[in-house]
Image (spheres, one colour):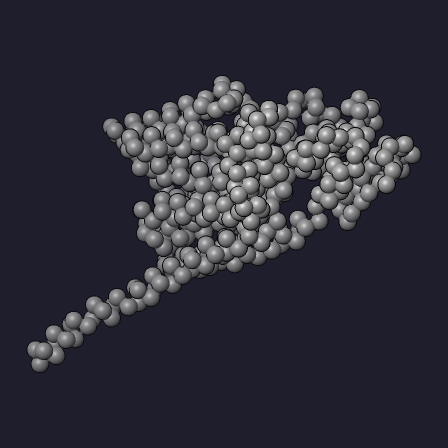
Length: 457
């Protein structure tokens, strides 16, 4: 009898452990599925070609010793070297790896406080805030820097502060978005003060913020970096009519799904949030509303904060991870179809025809591909590097694109002789009715007009 009793007691812990092991296996399987879905998105979706083309153009110029822009030099060189080593597939794999690293760092930050399953849920929320942008040129490298920065700051140690400053230096040299490291670190330090941190922990939080601020001076742009980088972030309201900035235009799925979940989570669990998380969360929220391209950054900050505060059941977390994986695959396929009709073949024809063109694009980011073509006769009026253009040039681009009063005079003043415009734009209709302009090429999305008497094909 004693032997039987001992045997039963010995078996009970094993029986209780089996559901725990099974639940853990399901959680890890769902996390693996999410990683596969993210990788699938990068491999299958069309890249954000204007951004990728300009980045590669910058890197090739630097490697060739030619004069180049002051912003994003390190990022351009790395992208050009990766592309030179393995072509477009290597570039897609490299950006997919950056995205996976970002989501892994987000999960690690949350799991340190709330466990692995909550960490997976935090990563899933970050993925939902990144829908539409899971592709080369979507900004996932910046997400990786932001996630690593927040993890370093969360340590509140001298080593963490030093690592945060080092990350900020690399980020500022890789992309203008590195400017965000300083306000993020300052918001975290302010939050630590609100939380009641004392002594070394508070000192190291502010030391990390100071290091990130000094990092903005450690770029080829020097003291001019903050001003140039701020304009490159496209937060200026003067850019609204020139480039897409509204969240529903830049990342509609992420805005409707990820942003909504963040807001609902903040309303439901805001009272449980750590005070240190509040200023960074408010800062990221304002950034995402100012420009939808920063929705992934909101996910990097809000994911760990809400996952640690919500204390959601394991089953709900696993369901969220699975839903994020399905959404990532579905949105990438939709984005792939939506971007398939971009008129870059028309740009290639203009670059190869051997004729001089002063090109105006509406939308202007199509001209980024024209700049990257590096054809001697193809000179875009403006491209996606709006930070480098003076206000007067932006005003002219806006006046012509919106066909404001006097737009024809502006065209003559800028010596524009070629237009690449969307079919359904008012500008395309007016050019088609004007005998001074002649349509020479078209596709399902865009039309090309040249001044009458120009190139014939």
